[in-house]
Image (cartoon, rainbow, N blue to C red; front, side, top):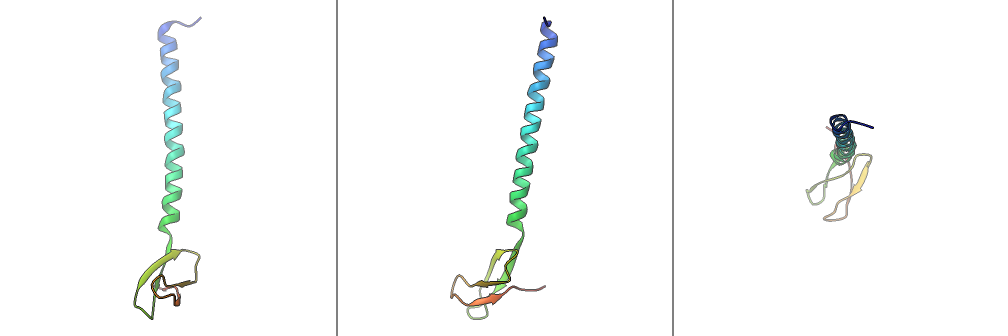
Length: 75
């Protein structure tokens, strides 16, 4: 049905497309994970003078050291 060189080229193209699609899928997934982790809010505890972070949409957060609730820092 197919000559050997034609079948080899078709096989190589299919393998290339498979690897390219896997690469793009995992790259997008890792980029999404990185962006979620990168977007953090910074807090400064006024009681124990500690800096800590929380997810970006948090406005008030308890200090992990002393438990005092602090507002997020504004720069």
